[in-house]
Length: 397
Image 1 (cartoon, one colour):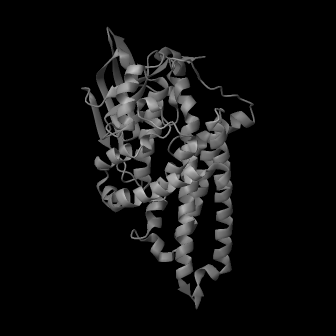
Image 2: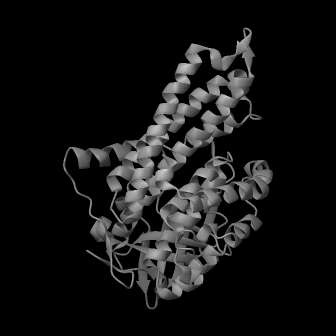
Image 3: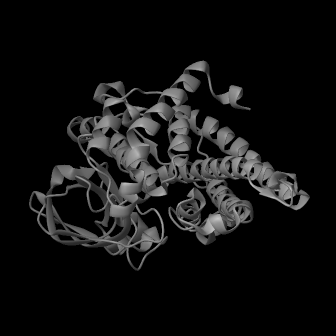
């Protein structure tokens, strides 16, 4: 299947990326998991290697490559067994930077997109609120115009890179009376007075910093409004297809990694005079789970190909996240079982994978919300329309 989507250049990229991750990242992972923060030097190394610029214009230091380079980056990040490190990288490169690239003014792009690609600045995307969860349209954070500034008040939560990032992409209501149609997107510098971040203590994704943020009269220049006022909701929805597909790809990749590890373990572990990969009950479980992972992977690659061709694949990306994250949880549950008591010991990789994977059906839209979105499309024939961008990056409806 791989030859349908990955060229020789893709495979060379995968090989060099694997080597880079083993040499530069893996030796530090346990420390970062324990301390709950990722040292700054690695961001610069990622930038120097061009990994943050894969999908972005050459004008700002990017490489402008097809989406399958991103797929490779996502897959290999899952295979070094730190969901938190992987999340910190992709939340910067595809959540924060996607908004800057699509909605930022030329001035914002020259400063923030360039520095994000080079690894000199780290970004985060702030949409979810403490009482809002998946209800994006119901957000309470406001941005009130005051002379030549906007003043932001409110709070956000579950924000990856929310503690240590240099800038924040913040969704806030500019016309609260319009509900979802009164939302805008802003770029906020971290050192702006009035921002406070509290680090959340999580079950998994331990290496990443996930924050609850408070904005108390945070005053930003008017030029930091990104795109058109009150068009934030369509902007956010526009990028959900990519975010959901990212989480779907992450799901199949970590499941694949868990299976590889479990199979190696089973080929070496003996019980009753033979290796445990000879027992039918275990063999059939592996057969079933491998089939599910292959199906998810094939669907995700097809969806990625369509997204890269400019199709609006919100339905397929939503299905990808729903099923791939579920399959990953089930695969990792079973792989942990294959290790017996060792699966429950932190010295073996499955314990961390088990904790990290559990966020899949929660983050980036819960499975319950995704099922309702799919139901609206499949049962009610709802047709979600993409936002359309004019040449200057602004949206038109």
